[in-house]
Length: 180
Image (cartoon, rainbow, N blue to C red; front, side, top):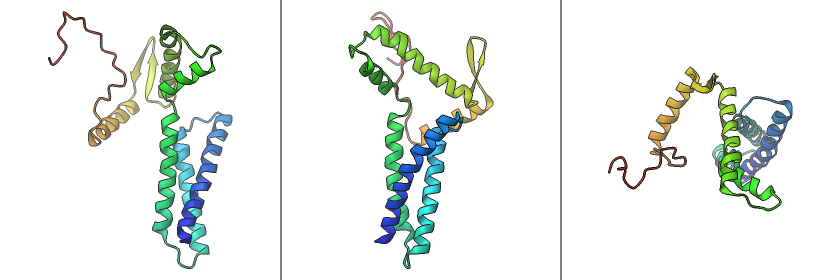
């Protein structure tokens, strides 16, 4: 029973440490990715809760601690991932902050979406995944390696094309759609 409590203590420590590391990194202007900071917080929290449990409990059961800890941390990570860099949520927040709480679609597409995508390309550039070449972007060697790993993971998880962003030219009624 107390091993489960150690796991819960680790989750509590993680929920304090993770946002603290994010805030410190932002203030310091660190280029460490937020996901890496979550991993650092998880490892630190896990090591601390396991060490405290092992030294303070006579019958410490690691797997009980680890299962509760992993479940709690994964809940946090999934929630973090759902709101971190979400294009849809950025648009929602932008609309909610406007005095009229509304905007024409053309304004959203013309102003907010390019701003979001510029931010995304800045992340890729600073992460060494792509580089600017005049008015274009080119994938780097590191970017090709990352893309290969992502493609492999998409294949393993049977993700395929999510269809989230379809940049294909719209077809008119007289044109024949591909694969039809």
